[in-house]
Image (cartoon, rainbow, N blue to C red):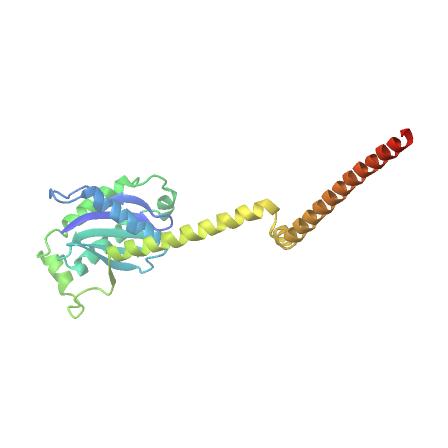
Length: 241
């Protein structure tokens, strides 16, 4: 059966509508499923899930989504629920959303603020609860040669692992950029940084040599002064004797 429904805006990954909560099983994690649906919507928004329709496997459940005109329609159902029927369900939702002005959808700011669509989701869902109704059997039997709709399939764990690797790459690039930025801020510009790195060792070496020479001349001058004083004292003693 259809357990969860979410409608979201692809441009920024904002969830704009959801059906009334209808998961009654004690073992079902409503908030967990909702967060996973929001995560998938964000991945679609980021462009990492570029297919317009996909089935995402997760344990004994399956997320199925459809993207049309910048809006994502997503549902969670049992893995045994016919994908063709789930896709028909999302297409019916898409037709209803098409009655709304897309300018209104683009103006939404808060999550799940298209509350007037929640009742529509619930009404359409009721038509797909029983897969054995005449209407649903007709949908399933249409084009029987194609048992499942033409859509990509992957697991949620694959998407999570891909996101983890992308986050690691982004953090590494960010750290490199910060370190380069800190180095550049010392010199003020990349050009000055290059000049500084090239000439700083030579300037430091020249400065050390100057300090050594200055110290040598200073010691020599002190030594010469002491010698002159000694000569003067010695000559004075000879005169008195």
